[in-house]
Amino acid sequence: MSGKRQYSDEFKKEAIHLLESSGKKVSEIERDSGLPHGLVRKWQQRFQVNPVSEALELSAVEQLKAQLPEVKRELEITRMERDILKKTVGIFSQDARA
Image 1: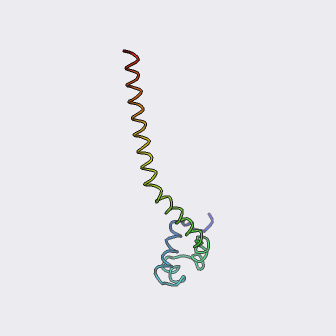
Image 2: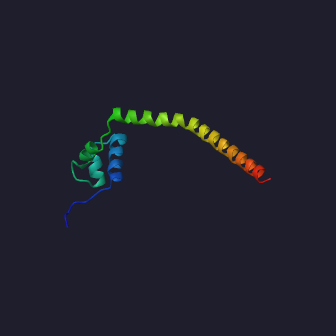
Image 3: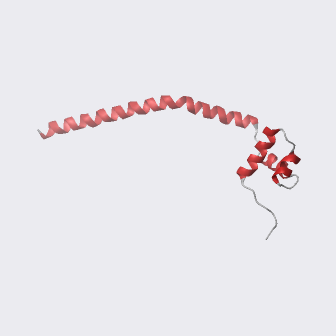
């Protein structure tokens, strides 16, 4: 057995969030959590978010959110057109039999 303990990504991100939001030093977080020295810093570097790419991601999400009402409206129109066509085909099918 290796003596290394494995932590989930969720646990690592929570430790980083605690570091950023609590105002505590890295050593305090590590001591309070029972983590080896330097581990939180490694996690922080691994999960570091690039602010520019995060802003681009958010703007893409915002664009999609803005398009959603229009797409929903187009879907509703398409469904109405489909229903009208179904009724029309039904009407013409009845006339052909008669």
